[in-house]
Image 1 (cartoon, helix red, strand yellow):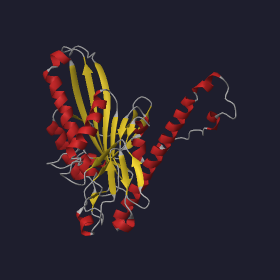
Image 2 (image 1 turned 135 degrees about the vertical axis):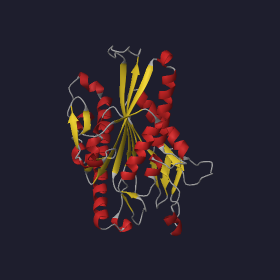
Image 3 (image 1 turned 120 degrees about the vertical axis):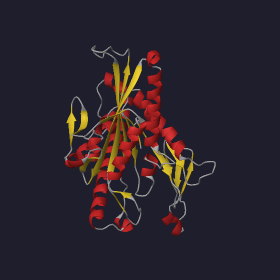
Image 4 (image 1 turned 30 degrees about the horizontal axis):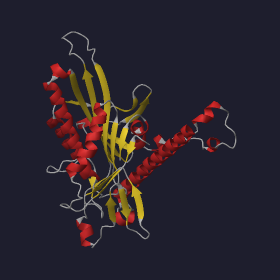
Length: 344
């Protein structure tokens, strides 16, 4: 899948792991990651970030990760492509830190918002020369136990049941979700902080602040090109539309290690089920992409009937991709299978 890139980041040992005298069992060299088991297991990724040893020559800082991943996502959005970032991994692996960061070390989400509004302000200052304008809307959604919740709603609106719709014209969208137009970085950051306070978290043996839900933060970007119309005239400028989804997935966990009980155990089961559905969808999409490549390699067979012994005749028939297996995969259908540029 050319449109999907996969990066891996290794965080430092946690306080719990240090107390247990744990060792780092992973090593990296370029795009290669080795898990030091017996025998060792080797994996290849598009990017590898070694963040275990601050101060070392190979250390990948938060700024390095934001610069490399965030810039490509933002460039794609300004070129009119939908973009998507998944933070995927076990509970306590540092997903929320990479996405949201802290006040001193902002994450990819904050980095992208700052760069987007820097570009917006630059075009605003040079509007006569560039004849371009950027408009931004945001939305913030939580998926908790297969229920959708708008993190930007207030009061009674917060109790409204949200449903996912699939339209031939609009694609997949959430009916009733609030989209907020934003004019400044401060306005976006205020909305992010408000949504973060509403997100459901709980303490487990593996993570003292474990996210119990998936969150989807969406930046809807319109890039208008052309002369600004006079008052009363129709706006005939060309518009590039793009959506940038930043998804902070809840971490997979094992009950034996997390020692979850009651409602926390139920949440963990729901999280693992939706992550399994996501993994199955990605596997099916990868298989389908591989089949399409195989068919293209036998393009010459289109000029003559395919014989029963032809390799292309043995290709399996593509199965339907189970996007509706979970709310998460259904919501992100266009991000995974459309013209979106996706990074995991």
